[in-house]
Length: 279
Image 1 (cartoon, rainbow, N blue to C red):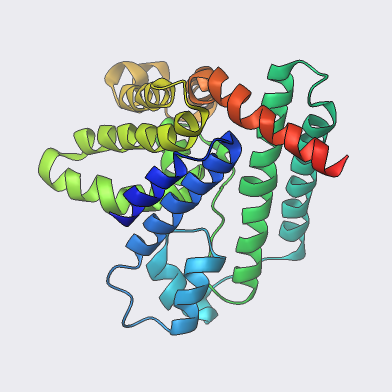
Image 2 (cartoon, rainbow, N blue to C red):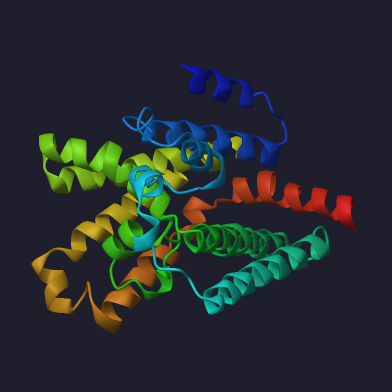
């Protein structure tokens, strides 16, 4: 109920990029609190607070109760790698900000989005993970080299945004698998992913409805196909062919996910604002 009221309030925010961050924040913290179900009374208070505010993952049990002695300490090389991803993301975002309003809009939009993703998802979240693991807390990276995925199941289930994958597995996949079977439950996870992305992409953009859902329906269809006998004969699900198929299915329909309305009404205004603020 509270989440619904907050989202209704967010619908009144006219600035697309502000609406996007508000909606994403509301949904993130609502899901975050849901993952704490069953752990409130037994977890240390400081870990509860840290998990809720200082860790983007959804692995509540591991973060709250791990033994520090069992957590491998990350090395300095991993820290430098995380910092390099932040630098790359900032460079891309900086280019988009500098050329906002002068370079072709699609170029500014896509380079800007890549900059945001590298800065936050690949770099920033990796830094947070490194710091927690350095302190002996179980906080594995959220993004786990998705470029190395050899199947769509591997990409979406174990490499890309593992926080969402953990939550979807706990709240959607496992409960539905007991009723409908694993295949139908897996399809529902992709559908739910599409609906969630509609709320943080199409909703703030006030347009492009259906694109994100169709994108994830395509991902689900691809993941289903990988398990068929025909896919096995083609050598999918492993090796170079599996990696190529994964890249094709993930990348080719991306304009459905990040549609024109999102580019023009959310991303471009964001970089216009940053340009006016900083330059």
